[in-house]
Image: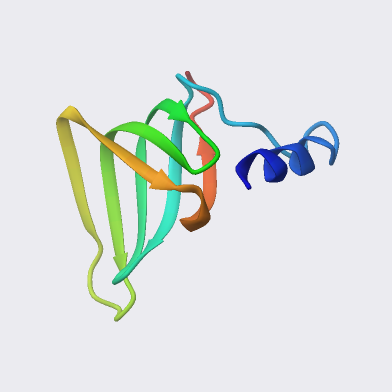
Length: 95
């Protein structure tokens, strides 16, 4: 699924899409049961089913309008995110 989606995005033309790579520093937003979460970190692995990250920061936006919750992780927290739940990938252009 991810490979097909990435191929479609790459065929859209230059500037339209960027493919994630291992060692990219990214922010990934995805849906969770209680709202949406954004995690910031370095990609460690990419498969057809998930993206692995070493997360240094995360922010939760609760669906019920509650305050957002921000956390910092030292050392980085290794996580895997299912590609079906990812809504956005943003790149840190400084790295």
